[in-house]
Length: 439
Image (cartoon, rainbow, N blue to C red; front, top):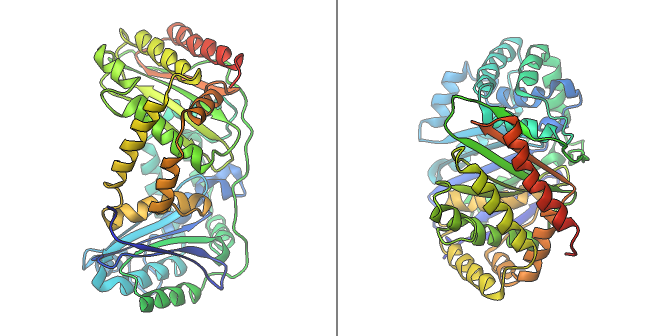
């Protein structure tokens, strides 16, 4: 069973919204504070690293601390932890601490965000740090291929090299203006988990409502993007490598429903997650690869994606391509039966017993959905979605993805252009055949 907990959604007088999740037996207090202030929210698209720089500068010491070392010692003296990250849509501040000092740490986190030292020295320091951070990805071929794959369908996302080149052009005024425009009460969403008595909830709400953020502004949303069909394979060839990593990704121009999300979870289990699964089981039995993956996602720009990839030898990649395309086409044609779905349901219900066993599990689980579309995936709701699984939706959903007009194929590693294009043609044929059939 999940760790005993109670979920309450609150809308503050300031316009921000979030979840307060009471775990009566918790010994840890955990929080996530999110502003829709990520890369896509930057006005000057030539300087997308403004958001990243803002995040870094907000992780420094509040104004009345002498320096970062003094603040770090004070914040972490009882093992508290905090960090932040930036993605396309959001800047996320998160942390946890022992229950005994929840109020001190939460107050310090709030102060850190609203009392930044926006100085030229701090800007220069963080510019150098981010240059080092991004420098790690320059020679990461997987990152490069993934970026090029999205570029192949019309994404305008800058490359790592372009992002690095833009950093020296960012001024302190750029950062301050981005901060003032995006760090507003209405643009805040949060999830807080711990031993949240009614008294503590009242204190948390008071701290957030009295938090001196600007009251103006709106809840910001990233722009929607339109993608186009790729016309070629994306290749990042490295002759010295002993393996090749192929990826095929399908993109549909809509956001999948919660019901469909659960069906994709079940499909991943049936196709990839176990040694007896339909695709991975066959790949392992035939010695084609050590591991294989299926990933689905919903982008904040209004599209949903379905991806497959592995790492295999040049001798086995042709067999991998054949098996994957064959089995996917069978599923799109309705090969899954009621017995398959029943097995997936049984597994999913039992897997729920292993989920949400810690405060960390709970905040991660609820944040994943709530901070995307403000939905609350309670234990009861998840079990209802599992109960609704059926082969008809699985067939329709797989048909929609595999027949998508927008899809991309790439290879990274020991490969060459001619071979990659030949393997791409297998998926192109599959895509065309499925599109010619009714869902």
